[in-house]
Image (tube, rainbow over the protein chains, first blue to last red):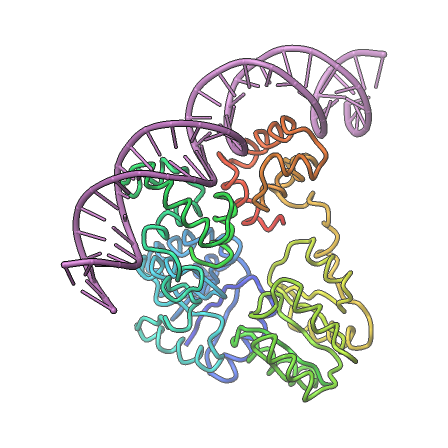
Length: 203
Length: 203
DNA sequence: TAGTTACCTATCCATAAGGATAGGTTTTTC
DNA sequence: GAAAAACCTATCCTTATGGATAGGTAACTA
């Protein structure tokens, strides 16, 4: 079995390769950037599986994933990430990823997951992902559904008017939710609210 | 030699331990949280070196580092991190850290760095510290010193008035800088500017 | 059934923010 | 020494934001 691991952290790459090869008997090539990964896929493939770090030069959110998936005769691709908003995981799967591997996964489990995904299965350990399930998050606990939707708009740098349009609400209503969620999360303006939400990995 | 590695990413912990032990002949204990690390330091020490992940449950920025450093007869402590704002690196060193190890470091270099730090030296990779002025960053390249200072204020959720007070400028001047930096970084309001700056790890 | 919660619309008001100009000094650069 | 860039203050204007209130509906819940 031959796989490709692309991650800009040399530390993880070096140690991971040693581990997967010795403990798993799997051949591994590596790349530190998306571009180099794509070159390897083109020249040294086919790979049974490609693991892309979600935070890596060239990835640009999920654009990098799509670029690899769009390759003619492209390989199965999974993302690997330290932390990611739940929405991103969902979007990656929808885009056709073979899985989403959290870096909190034990090394031994990763070897199993690699075999699993290379066999054509989809690997998504929801329980291991960041506590991004809105209902589970301390900050999100106190927010209503609407307030969360509004907060998501804030976290994207949108104006009240834009949020109102997106949610098909009136602007005064949005302003109300904004004001209420400020109190709940301890923000005094929309920038602070956005930063707090981002900090909490809510979105 | 006995060291402690604390990182919440099982994947890195598992593979790193295997690597450091076999390739470096160094004894390693590990912990997934700061609290467990401190327990180990208390019960299983003394350690020649403690490596703390900057992003790990319980760390709370640099507070975790300080907690360990403040221990009576505390060990030498270094931080390890995937990415960190320059200011954080500087602050960690000032607080008494034995070093700051980027995860982009090759595994072999880490083994050397561990020995180096355990011997009492301070390890801070030049490429991590040299561009201490924001001049190295593509986004920062186009911003003047003042605009950067103003952007930092924005990134902390401050109002123009607060920024003006902090920088001892008049509010109209701050507004000018704000407007100009929007153009340069492609933001249309302060929240977007803050998120872009945060995204670029500028602060 | 009555109370609670979430959700919606609306108005009023003070302040902040964003954009456009105009004109000034200092420092850097050619 | 002239030109350019950075930096500063200011005014005018429009819109956005944040806060306070008031009142309404639907759903669920003790």
